[in-house]
Image (cartoon, rainbow, N blue to C red; front, side):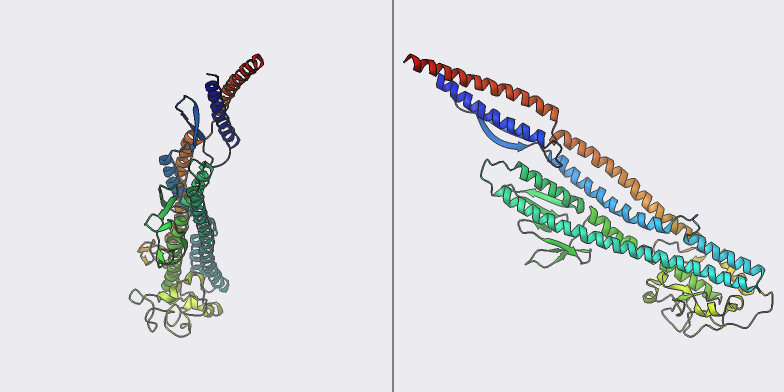
Length: 478
């Protein structure tokens, strides 16, 4: 009986000490990011003694999967908001004096003033100055779009570096987990791997499968293996913007639907080209419409005509601007140098609209007080049937209103993304709270359990002491 008592007490001490160690480990790491509560699994032996089992984690995999998906959506929106905010800050608001619509309104005012005093040289110069302001604004906005593209590309490169580093880390942790001997505590390694998977899911949407060995296979949403068991790499390129590389297989495009990378790619492949196309089209419209009234106020870099697909004819609805020249035109538009040198062209008009090869030539001088050409320019700002061709711009509209709406749309796009981001952030926070409740460490609870185990440890120690005293008495009697 004494031997049974000693055996039970010793097994109780071993299990209690192990559980105390686990509780202490939980309490110590309560604030460690990504740490999950550890639990000792104990069993009862044939003689009733408590036996040590494996250490497990308190993890709700369904919640963890939901968190990864939602975090990906949140990061996608955060990337968009960050880059759209740069656009909004530079583009300003329609009411701002520096906005594109305000500058075009300033050009309208300059022509209106000139129509009252058509012979006044200073007012001709005011038109040129107002044209300069419009051109510079289009140039500056183009630079902003280009800078956003550059920033997005740098962020994309950084994100891909993190993706490839994380994939290698997951593979390493898989190997460490799957090669551990049976019964070994791999819970800390599993925590580290979950943290790596969380990081990866925040960058791009993934699918995971747990293998019998304990390793986790990682795939893209469109079925490309990232870790299974070979480690693939992800790089820029391909029709989707991203290339999957896993020799000996041939590189293949992959698509991402959420995560930081999806947000950046959306800006790179959709937002930036659309914005640049709209800017170029507004610059084209200003050039074409002034050409049509024989006031070639704007040209390419101020020196070259904006040519049509048929350069021998004036640009018109049947002879649209050459797409190759139109690309990036908003960054190059300027007041034509000949008009700048000979401002009387604004009053008298040119011999032919800019768009036909050859230099601009001033038309015959009009009679003093004749405002027929200037009046056409003034009327241009009131028209509502000015034609546009870029995606996102109306087919026809007023040049000031179209510019105003264009500027306002940038704030609207950022605000809509911010609203969606706020909703996703609330959902991520709620999921974190649920996961913390299921997997996190409640220090008060752990301390309470620790107190109980300390008492149990003392009780087992007293059994051993009593057994020792009994044997001592027995030996002394012998």
